[in-house]
Amino acid sequence: MTEAATEQSIAPVGDVPSASAGRSEWSAAWVELRRKPLFWVSAVLIVIFVAMAVAPQLFTHTDPRYANLADAFKKPSTHGPLFGMDRQGRSVYARTIYGARASLSVGLLATVATTILGMIMGLLAGFFGGWVDAILQRIGEIFFTIPLLLGGILFLYKFPTSVDAPLIVQVLKIVFVLALLGWPNIARLMRGAVLQVKPSDYVQAAKALGAKPGRIIFSHILPNALAPVIVVATINLGVYIAAEATLSFLGIGLQDPAISWGSDISDASGLGEITAAPHMLLFPSLFLSLTVLAFILLGDAVRDAFDPKLR
Amino acid sequence: MVRYIIRRLLQMIPVVLGTTFLIYTMVFGLGDPAKGRCGERPCPPAYIAKFNAEYNLDKPLVLQYLLYLGKLVHGNLGVNFYGNDVSQELTTRYPITIKLTIIAILFELVVGIAAGVLAGIRKNGFLDNLVLVSTLLVVSIPVFVIGALAQMVFGVKLQWFPVTSTQGTLGQLILPGLVLGSLSVAYVARLTRTSLVENLRADYVRTARAKGLSRGRTVGVHTLRNSLIPVITYVGADVGALMGGAIVTERIFNINGIGNFIYQSIYNHDGQSVVGAVTVLVLVFLLINLIVDILYGVLDPRIASD
Image (cartoon, rainbow over all chains, first blue to last red):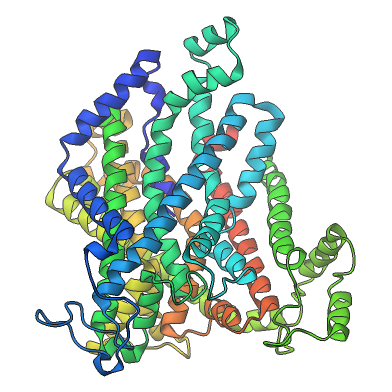
């Protein structure tokens, strides 16, 4: 859903066509990025969430699956459960901390997968042109027209996750469907970037000197076409995290022993829970929104840094 | 123009065929299509044989798909788990979902464009920053969180709106409609702002101002019309996201529309209904995008001529 908003505002990389500018563009962007307070805010948030995902034990000693019904719906307090207790008397704080792992791994893996797949498809389409381009574009359109959530629902409905499947299998299944439906976005961007770089003199010169397609792609086209892809990939990360949470909220994403912000929010959003224990809804929602916000801010900052018009 | 429309129609054919084939293969070609038809137990062989014959599953995949496509053209989506006709189930429910979506789109257009214009007219002013920050917040909160929070605050605590919307009357659909459109309002506002700011710098705007036209006329007539082109494309593409969002919103507010139908069907392992409803939504989405593309050609003649 961000496609229209992001594609609009991305500067064409072709503005700096010389080969050496490829490197200086990156360092100029870094200099620009370092000066932005919003970049540091988002970077710090992301580092905290990644730490939470890698080592949740650093933040809490409570077992997120330990349930004590006597504590059910206990309100948050400074000298007790910090974020309160859920319906089954599990610590909302511990569950919120442990929930970071599922969200971030889906977000990161889905972004890596869509980016790699999209870049390969876009490169092939843009570089070879002709019928390869026509076929790849039509295939992309087919996947592009299936809305992310509808496609995800259909796929996960058809191949449901069994409750005892390990977290990584559950995560990979969601990543697979997000990547399957998400790559045309990146491919389109990559194709456009390649078409912009291809006619430039240094690529023509390399071709005339007899460079093989592989060399032209890796040392001339890729470095120049990478910037817009990275920007969109960063913003998409937030979108994928939200998509995973939505699928888990609907009950077909991650399954119960796995802890996910989406399914915890789903548990908390029954009318009984909302009135009895609004903290059950508040804390996972807050962490989820902060994570998405952090990646959107990062994407915004990176986009501004790469946009020569704003410099 | 006519050539442009014909070209768009021709381009749509492979996409429609590809998309429906993909959905069909995923649901009937892979795995066990009869799974879940007999509740928790595996189906008896006699039932499977009857089921396979009824849905042509004993024929090669491509032929199966063509037969399915033929049925689809006639509006026949098969019979679901409860023996009800899926297309009939959808017919009784679609008016509510359409009402909900229209409320969301109106909200998107009116509030989004107004906020975008207010922000864009004075770049870096107070209103601009307010709009940028508030849209950023809305964008980062997923729809289902906004829905649950809105239900808690406006439904349960303040009691301004009904908590659930079981009858689907207009008054009951307002809050869910606003929730459904909230994410897109933020995007429309940002898009309008960016495109207005860009267009206000254009030469033709300077010329209009130099000729002594009032500020209201230069912004309202000259700039806004051009700035709204990307907004319209966005709203078209957004219908797909609204359909996904409707599943979530209708579930939260217990609305009897197509979204909730899909959710309930997933919950009840009612495959025929899930596939039928999702296929119809994807086709509607394709159709709306075709209309938007044609509209785009009308608004911006450069698109149609190249």
